[in-house]
Image 1 (cartoon, rainbow, N blue to C red):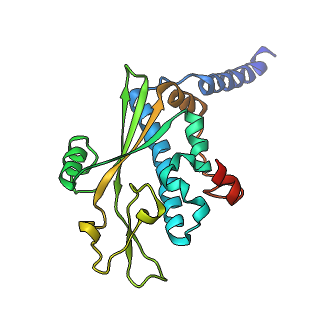
Image 2 (tube, rainbow, N blue to C red):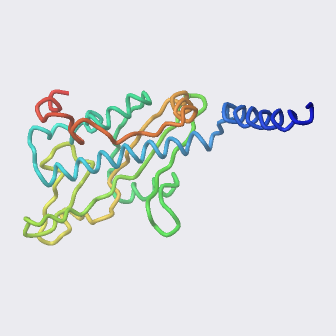
Image 3 (tube, helix red, strand yellow):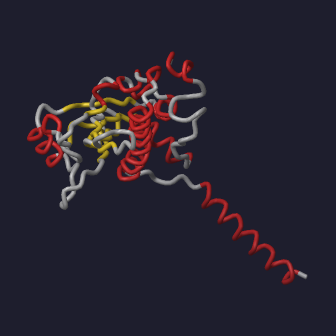
Amino acid sequence: MALGCEPEKLERGKEMAVEAERHKVKRITEEDMEKQAIAAGDTIIRLVEGAFLQLAESQPKEQALFVAQPDKLPTVNSILQRYNATLKRQTFSSEAEAQQYITKAGLVTSDGKTQPTATLQVREGQVNYQRPIEIRRRNCASCDEPSLLDYTSPTLEQLRVYSAQGKPEGLTEGQVRGLWLISFPRQKIIEQITLKTKPSRRGRGGFFGSKPDTAAKQ
């Protein structure tokens, strides 16, 4: 009788061990925090630049304020609030300054492609995310000439850069004009890793919220 019960005890022991492993708190490293910040930062910037492209194409004037304040985009603001993070833009005075900065900061790969970085600032208790802001090409079917998009611009009119030559004011596609900067509180990054949650792109009505006039008031 005793021998017949033993396998069941062993099986239960294995199940308890597996369950204990599931609940074990993972030691969160600096690398873990920086990876999480890059994932969250990339999601935010994809949302912002996607919204800017949509603004440039459809020209909804009631939404133009988001070019000056991209952190007010409902879908972006939702993620920023989740992390208690701040989003800013920084511009460079010249192309030479931009190249010098991104090279020193590790924002460009060996083959010349830009990349994001995230750095833990222990003293400040923050993880700082950076991504270069590049000139993008806007291929508009209704335009006589393809135009460029400058995501550092504070207005909808300046966002769209037109040129018959394709190089307005010396601007070229892929040229670095500035930086997206996001500061994440370290504790919020840790919370997100612990909860195993990911930033969501789900919003009420897309980039600009449920209703145009409601979003414009935010």
